[in-house]
Every structure is written in structure tokens, then in C-alpha cells.
Image (tube, rainbow over all chains, first blue to last red; front, side, top):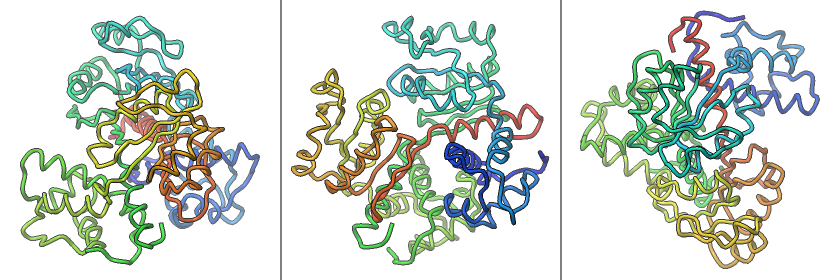
Length: 215
Length: 215
């Protein structure tokens, strides 16, 4: 099912959306869906969906629609969900706390194994069953525990140094909420999350609506 | 500068990224940038950038590069930033608190005017200088104050009802972090934020790296 040819970034970005939507269909006990119905929901053309799926071998006949459960599981495998990836959170402020309690991470198969901070008042407290550790003990922890993903919710000024320590300690992927651009060795996977992007999109849509255009 | 023809959703989604990147260039005191350099940074082709900008009239000659400050300001106007949009946050849990203190919202011209919750222990406390109000007083508040945007960080089960009340009270746009799909009248702008999407993308990239593919 997997192919070696490079999948475009835009296709990869759509995979989580497909996965989410298929999960919702499953909950509603829907067994099959046509590429047409899927396309309407996803706001991409049916031919785009077929093209996307062709990168991964196709997933079955379009005339009869897709088998929802099969498609959901296959896309989950492609995304590497339920591979037992472990994660830590660095920065136990409000955002770090919110993410530590984010049930969707666990549901997608990611396991929170540690939270780190440098604030003496927070170190030793427990968030969602996980103890907040001193950032000074990061190297020791990484030597003893396999950590696949680190979520970065530190202040902007601290993030580059922390990221380098994480990568040195074997962490493969970083989810960066800090708004700083990270400069890291090739091969480290980084996703930057910019919470104000959707806010700006919303602002655009409101402006359009005010000017009488449809949103 | 503005045109009535419908701008594709993918182009709109790229505007905040252009805006952010241009803002960084400005900070570095860079005056001009070629579409080639911009394209490399943005990970889209130079011709895509020109096509994107053509929806808004073009923004100047490609041969001499773009004027960074001019482009930044124009895109900001298109996005409706600094229009004085007001926002409230409904749900003062960890995520709501994190967003209330999110300096980038203010920097983009959005003004936080209220925070609402239904928890007696939180109501009356202050977050980032704004008092947490009882959600039962939402209608009264909306009658007395213009609110353009509401950020929804309530539990999933509560969000549809709250969203309907907000729309009835004149709120034009909703930034929905609740993971519930909202069903609302046509014309209400909604942006759904799914924090686990970039996490899944990261998982995909890590899996690719493990299998020896480039990320």
C-alpha cells in the first residue's frame, strides 16, 4: 500500500482531515461513502480525492464508494497513528496544560510520558496524571526514555535552545507552538502551529461579509 | 485593490502565512524581496505567488521584487486586521486562558473585551486584565457591546448551544476549538481549529523518517 514516491505536502496535510471525517462517519455507523459525498464534505473535488488516494494505492473502487472503516484504518496506518509514539510537553503554562489534557492526542495513539518546566512553583505538580519535571533533568530523562515527539510551549526566546537539546537527545519530531522559527539539522520533523492564522482567516471572512460578499 | 471575484479558499489560507513571513522580514529591516525568495520560504512556486497576488491586483513589479512594507500593509488590509475587531472567549479553562493571554491576537489588532464561563469558582476572576463573566449574562453583554469574534473553548457538548446564542446576539465570526461541528445559519464565518491535525502530520513525517524516506 505504501509507495516510495514523494507525496506532496498539500496531500499530506489533507490526510488528518480525511481521517477525522472518516472517524465521524464511523461513529454514525456509516459503512460506505462515495468520492462525491466525501468531496462535498471535505471541500475538495472528487477527482482531487482520487488523485490523493492514488499516492497510496487507491483504496478500492470508486463506483461502489469507499469502505469507511477500511479507509479510516488505512489512513491511520499511513499517518503512523497507534505506532505507540510517545510525547513530552516542554512548557507547563496554560497552553502546555491544555495540551496535556487534550484527549484527542491519546485517542490518536500518542502517549504523554513527561512534562517539563523551569518554574520551581510548578515542578513536582501533576498534570493529567503526569508529574512536571525540572527542565534541567531533560537529558537524563531522554537517556532513560524513548521520546518520539516533543510539544514546545515555552516562551519564544527559550525554544531554540530547548529544541537543540531535544534533538540531541533523540527526539524525532517537534510540534512548535512558540512562534519562533527553529533552525535544526536536516531530518528533524517540525510542525509549526500558528494559532493566529485561523484568526486572520476569520477576520478576512468577516470583512467580506461586511462588504456584502458571501463567505 | 479589492476585487469582487471569489478568491479560492486555499489562497485565503495562504494570506496569513504571507503576512507573518513579511512581518518577519520587516523586523529584519529587509526592504524588498523577489517572488523567487518569497516562494522558497513559503514553499509554493513563484508562479503560484504571482497568481495568488493577482486576485488582489498584483502588488507591483515582479522584476524588481516586492516592496516588503507595502505588501505587508496591503495584505493586512485585505485580511481586515486593525479594523478594531473585538473578541470574547467562551470557556475559561486552560486553553481559554492561554488564548486570552496570546499576545499575537492583540498584535494583529484584535481586542479582547470579555471572557465567559459557567464555573462559579472562575467567574469574577481576572485573566489578562479582563474579568470572567457568567455565561448567563451573555445576551445582556452582547446587547451592550459590539462583539465581532467569539473564540469557543467550551466542552464539545456545550458548543452548539453557545454558538447559536452568540450568532443571535450579532457575533459575526467563530473560532471553534471544541472539535464539534457547528451547524449555523448561512453567512456566519466559522474557523474550526483542530490541534491534533499537525500532530498527525508530524506522526506521518516521523514514520517516513523511520522508513528512510526524507521528510
